[in-house]
Image (cartoon, rainbow over all chains, first blue to last red; front, side, top):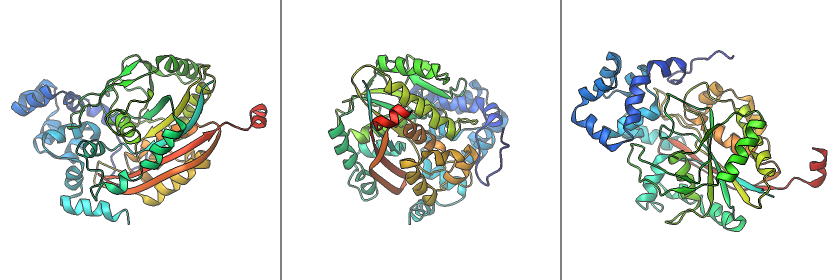
Length: 114
Length: 289
């Protein structure tokens, strides 16, 4: 087996993350259902408790902070379902993670095509 | 006998679904992307596939991380789409071809690809969006479909070499099917993009253009990259090129390019389209093989 190597700023969703993130990702998976999205919006604490989020995961969700959620084992495809509840799209979360404004992030994407 | 008429690879970014729903095809942001598709649609109208085999990755609609198959094949007469949680309109069901699905599944297992076989399988945007792009409009169900899901979500992922071999095995399976059907192979996702981490927004035009070239005549060149190499060069979600490589593997004859398009950005992604025709291998090559 090849040893994994670090790529700066690039999370790899592997065995450690899958194990650490299961509760958070399971909660996000539940957001495929509109009833569950509404239940989360109505009582976030109760909903997170129901899915057994770790304290680190609960704090990350409370902070609406994607890098913290990834650190807590969140997978970005599942986190995107949660981000949608907060009204954030992938440019918004890209800007948040890179510390850029959304406009600057979008401009960077356009520049990469030139 | 069944014939593999060609392969198409296309980006599957969810935002495309919203753009279609809102009719933004001529919007300046979207036009360079949507303008890539009419040549593909015209070619499809000419070659008339009966069945489409779609290599794609599920993003947490049908499969959750509790049970994550490396390779799964649908074996149903109908595939439904459903709410994915991010506001895309839900697509109408797609007709399947369970006879051909089971034929492929049996052939793959005999060929040492131990597939997860799904008699019920929800298909997500990675399946629906490319089909909506290739057959636009309300009635975009002129073909029967067979979904094949590749895990590009949770590492360890299958290697590029393994995905190419899976495609080749699917190609052999279709070549041995007795019914007279034209089969199109589709691979979806990519090209370079990264949604997560401080490197979010990473795109690699040079690498993508090299891949678009290599996929035409020398897909085996791409099997030299490990998945960590692909993450580094194409971004965390750029590994979806594994679906493209599997598609290309299934084209077992003489392959020629019909059309391609490449445009940055669509959402956070370098979007791309590649249309390849597959002619039967020359008879002498068949005998030699």
